[in-house]
Length: 547
Image 1: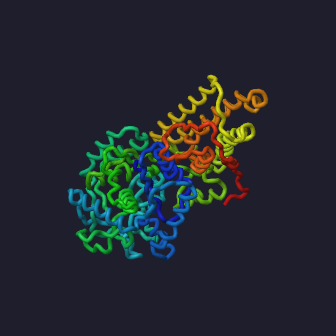
Image 2: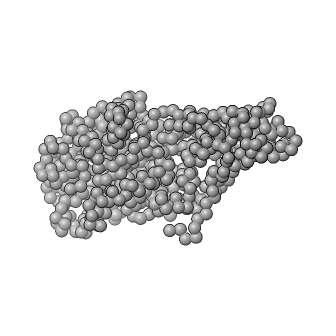
Image 3: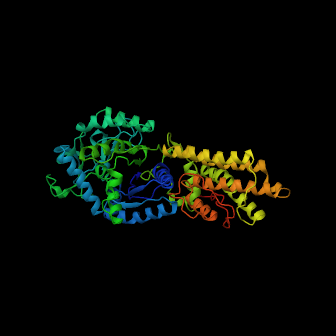
């Protein structure tokens, strides 16, 4: 299972929209498959060459490398604190990434899908330089939004070229750009269009908004697209590029950033001491690959990247692109560039990592935009995670400690209700696993929580706090069954709240880790001395004046 996660621009930390849109879903999915026993490789990295980095560098009067080096360590801190379990999080500044990008470029050229053309590109006469797409802003010709960029309109999601914009202006100086001739390499997407269309029409299990957008995009007609640009920052051209003034050109970030999934896989293999290990995920036809991105990245991952792979060689195409919709805050799309939504690290000053993960997981924008508020996050955590799951664990462990010395008891004769509860937990686990396979993460989490509610219902019916005074065997059996159910739910919650689940696994004395242990309820043997349990989660209170 290759879990490929969108590469964040190194111009600022991720906000909750990013986390809920791509990184948390990818981690939940990867953690499930690791538990199930599949070989997972989860990769991403800092996109060092995105135009937002050069824009910020220009504003600060520093080199783009300074911006990347500032933010990359903070990304690692963010992933560690949130429990986002990358096998490798790298950058696009490595020599390895450059070489792999050149391999894809040469493959396209050798297969007849690359062509040098002289075209007119926007030029800022005040700054005396050509303008990459995101250095050009203007009015979207599709929806009329006045803040569209030269590559895409965030308002309607339409992919653009700078020349499409109405009333274009330079982001550098505000000047009206003029068109001047320049030579660039173009990928001949028009020649790959039918192959991409046929492939898309054969996809099964994709989200409707993803497959419909991708197919609609292709059916409108794929246009040949420049893969180089006039810029001094980015992956340089290979020595055999064959273009005029190659030192003044770089490979376009839209083309090379997605290659990062492949280059990161190769870098991971090299770090393992087995440089060929990446092939298991990219060449074995039984391998699967899932690309976790936001909906604005659908064309790049469901159309352009498959076209690049088809045109350059024989590597595996995406199994699925489960792109999420947007998280909005009071109706505005979360965005670093527009300053909407606070950084995820800010929330970790208020929420425990598991609590933040849970609150977001209940609000994942899988099929519709989700308007998120701090109050909704708090409600989910306090009313569900703390009150239902955390309280269940605490009360059962406390009763076992009080009545049985903290030792898992030998059960007596099972009643129907005992058998029914364990069967219910097993059924919830099975259904949750099926939903996780389909990347239906919100519904999967509901199955886990429904299992916790079932245990609470069982305890209320069996009332071990009452039978402890009159029927020791019945009490022992009730607590034995409840502990077995909680052990099963430890697995069920593990992809979502990994820190608490690891603590629970320790308290149960599991001798093997949850990862690789199988997606099933583990039996806890009678006589097992339980660990000293503490509250799994704390209630959240928002500060009076959150920053």
